[in-house]
Length: 364
Ligand code: SF4
Image 1: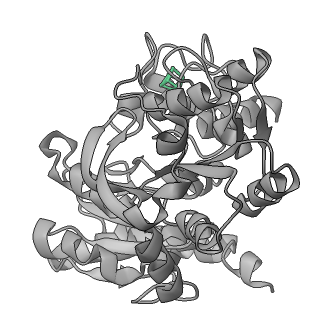
Image 2: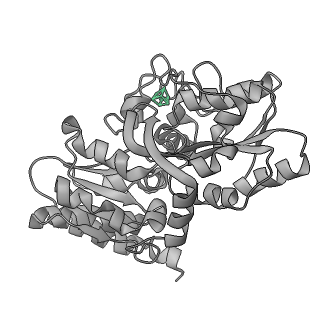
C-alpha cells in the first residue's frame, strides 16, 4: 500500500474516530482551530466533521494565503499595472477583490498582468525583456516566502521589482488564541508552513495560552490523528506541543530557507484582510534589498483599502466564527464563478472549498 493510501485507510479512520469519541469530553464544547486551506479541504472533502462527537468543532482559521491579502495591497498591484508595469502573479491572486478592482479587472482595462507558476518564471520574463518594467506580486505564508528570498539573493534583473505581501502564521495564531469570544481549546498547526519554520515556532501556544498544539499532515488520517492527540492532551489536562507530521516536519524546520528569509526580509506589523493589523506578521524587503522594492521604484503606496465588500462575511469566515453557509450571499450572489469576497476566490479559501463540495454533493 502506498503511503498516501495508508493515510486514507477507511478501517483505520473508523478506529481513530472511535478513539476520538472515547477521549472527547462528554460535556461542553471543544473548539479546535486549524490554519491551513489544505487542512480545510481534507476536512470538508473527506467529511471528517461528520465523524466527530457533536460537541467537538473544528473551525478554519486564516489559513488561505490569498484570502488574507488586504485590499490595500491588491490596490498597490493594480496601481502598478495601470502605471504600465507588467505585474506577474500566481493565478489565484488575479480575481481577489481590491477596493475598486481586481488585477483581472485591470487586465481587462488593458494593463499587462501575467500569471506565472513560480517566481523564477517572473525572473525569466524580466530577463527576456530588459527594456520593460516587471513586478512580481509575492503572496503567501512562510511556505512560499523562501522562494522569493532565494530569487532576490540570486540578484534578479534590475527591471524586476517585488511587491512583497508574505505573511507569517504564528502571530495570526496568537491573535486567535487571545480572542476571548472565540474560546479556542487547541490548534492543528499547518503542515506545509511547519516544514519551513519547524515545530519550535509553536512552543508559545501550550506554554503561554495552555493550548494543545499539534502539527498535522494533510491526509484524512493525519487530521484525525491530530484531533485525537489534541483531545487526549485535553483529557489529561496536559497541554503540549506534538508532531503528528514527523515524516516532513522537524523541530528546527528548514534552516536554509529560514536563513534566506532572514537575509532578505525584515519583519513588520502587517494588515490582514478582515483581521486588521497583526504585530510582527509581515515580511518586507530589508534595506540591503530595497533596490528591488516595487513601492520605492514605482512610487506606489496605498494605506487603506476596502477589505470587505457589502454583505460579505469573510472577516467572520476567516476566523471560523461563522461557516460559509451562514453568509447570506453564499452560492447566491457569491459563487466561484462570480466571487464577492476573497474567501470564494482561491482554491484554499474556505467559502470556495465549501462551494466546491456543495457542487460535488449535488452532482452525485
Ligand atoms: S460566501 Fe462570498 S460573500 Fe459570503 S463570506 Fe464567503 S466570500 Fe464573502
